Length: 66
Image 1: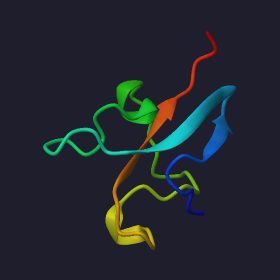
Image 2: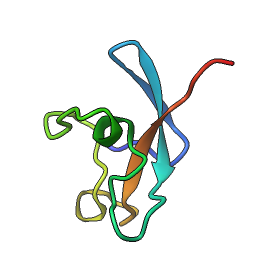
Image 3: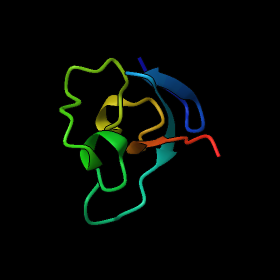
């Protein structure tokens, strides 16, 4: 499943948003899964450019309620 940039989904009680990659050196930097040492290979959401129709790498950022 591919989420467009800006779309959200819930994972384990956390609201996450598909966002453009922030680092040109480490594609996963800033991603909720990477930053929390959670293996993401089993997820249905596509994040790598070679698996997405828009050819863009994305990360999933947590949206926190303020």
